[in-house]
Length: 216
Image (cartoon, rainbow, N blue to C red; front, side, top):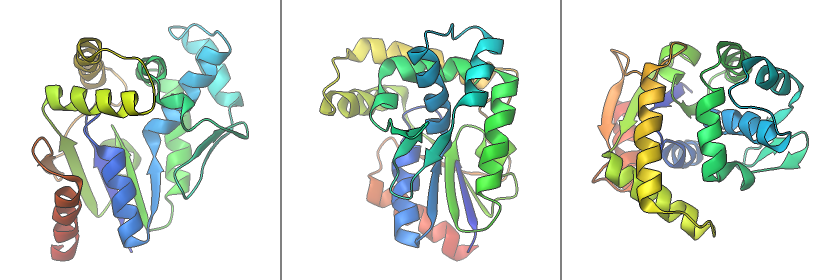
């Protein structure tokens, strides 16, 4: 068994691919983005200012986050798998993830989870910070218009009332924040394999990564 790290911008399909890949390989999937969403969700629920690093860190310290093998995420024992997928929480996750102490706290938890082999972990700093020694490193990207459409379809399917233009702008803004933050910015590390998923199906992407695994 090996560890597989997948990075990339928001809505590039990282979690979908990581979850499918883990299932096919019999590995465990860790969605690190969901952990930042969980912190943001709890901050919002407690009416904490998302620009207040100290207050957000205090919430993060007291928040118990659990990931189930099936992909559900629990915050203090409550299943919040759907609650953390709203646009508000998505924007909140981008804000709390820029705080160094919160990143350090969650990165430590993520590294602890993946101490052994057999994990597929996705996020925005997995190849560069969390699992720099992963045997397979993927940088997954896609055209921002396509990513906005994917997010729009995902949210509307779940019953959320969203506008495409708003989602598009928020993705552009989030890309800028993720790539320009001081703490663990989104980057493509030198030994990562870049996959542009704009015109690829889930099956095609998974098959491509499996080929990379087999050829290593």
